[in-house]
Length: 95
Image 1 (spheres, rainbow, N blue to C red):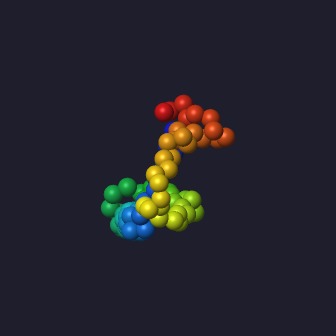
Image 2 (image 1 turned 90 degrees about the vertical axis):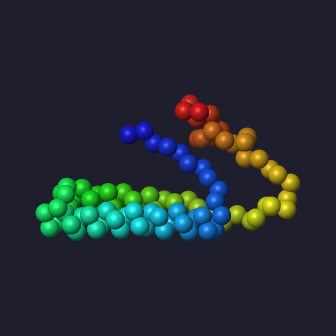
Image 3 (image 1 turned 135 degrees about the horizontal axis):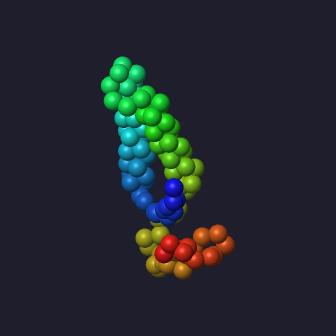
């Protein structure tokens, strides 16, 4: 499956919202796995696998996040020169 690269900068509140949304999404799959174990819907393994995928995504988001100083008072420094660049400054062919 093709992969997508996401490079975003979010506020603390937005980051917390993203974490909470992923946790809720994971928990929803966990609940569906429990229901499936009682004979409802798809197999429990499917939903458990989806919950695991969302947990892995949540861990990646947390691992790759870092706090940055608020630069609202500094002159604007655009991230445009690095946009679309991956692996040693090579352009992303998907851009």
